[in-house]
Image 1 (spheres, rainbow, N blue to C red):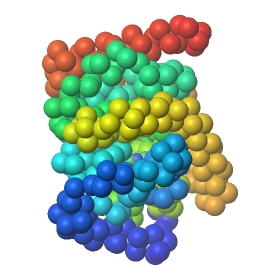
Image 2: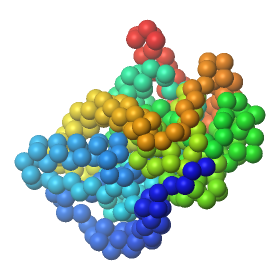
Image 3: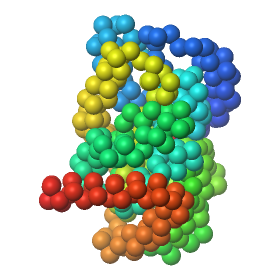
Image 4: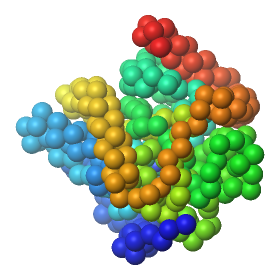
Length: 353
Ligand code: 6CS
């Protein structure tokens, strides 16, 4: 295993401190009622990430369309806390908008873990974009679950294929034996990596680099742009494509804030969210391609693409995860699962993929 950069390590240490600072901030400044024209948008990713690109484009549009009446302030990861803490801040109205990725949000809204079932989303990412960005049936099924937690589900989008980074070559569930893989904190992900034969270890994003560096974990899984910007590739030996998962995220608003918006401001938010579906889809694709090149140029990490036969073994195991999801979520989860499966299939049929 290679050593990572000291500067990167310092960055993560700073994040540890900032999690504590975030609570103080939430109780202090952020707990003040927000000025009608100033909206706060918190990210689970750092400056330069896909979520940051979304928030920057959202901000630009909102500020321009409102003629400067509304301003949007962006809080990148590391300024307010972990994903779970950001969701809490959005739910209690300390901030107006946040990214809330299913990989963490599943603790609060179990049904959203449907997006964490391996091999369920399409291999045709255009279908994922369409279904996540616009399917009424999916939003209808999920709206109430978010509302019950004080959140308005504004949109969902894919951020790129998730790739395993590891300190040993993994091509089969047997290779995963006794392998500690970091997963996000939603319970279904633990089930998923158990089904794959690994020893899953949930932890916040900010702890992954040091966890890898110190050998507390042997690997992790994330989209390419994140592997590059979080420098995970510096402390890992392999990048492995198993085709199991798109990283997906949601953008949520505080429910009371959204519900209380004037018609004009609600239209401003809704139209911007609609416009962003195509914008962010192109951006994530571009970021993932560019960052892969950067990793290739700056490291000697070995890249492995599992073949169809190897992937089929993991896909077979993913059926257990689907069952677990239904056990965890009951009828409401099954409804979302069926709706998602159906919507993806009809998109694939239409697109001939
Ligand atoms: O692994 C994680 O926890 C995080 N990964 C990404 C790419 N975005 C946010 C999420 O929290």
